Image (cartoon, rainbow, N blue to C red; front, side):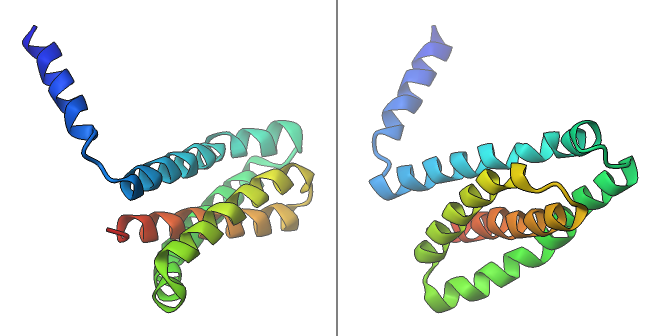
Length: 132
């Protein structure tokens, strides 16, 4: 009984969140759902596109390497043009990249889209964490 009351009290606290915070929570959820494609990227590359495991691992590693530099880059751009505007642009661009991704079949095109998607996702996270 006490656990249920604790849960309902927590839900009542959520009603005090501002609209802006709910938008931020929702956009982070959308971005996180988009990032789950990384879990299946290596499998897709090996099984469907017949890439070697080394090539698939290189693509996966590229995401991580680009993500390291994407945060500071997005921060600089956010400082110049405004955090919210850059967040919207990154979230929209990430969605476009996911729509285009199945059309890419060569190593170079997949590497380019993966690098661009890393910038969109990781740059968004950095800006979203510093928004409030």
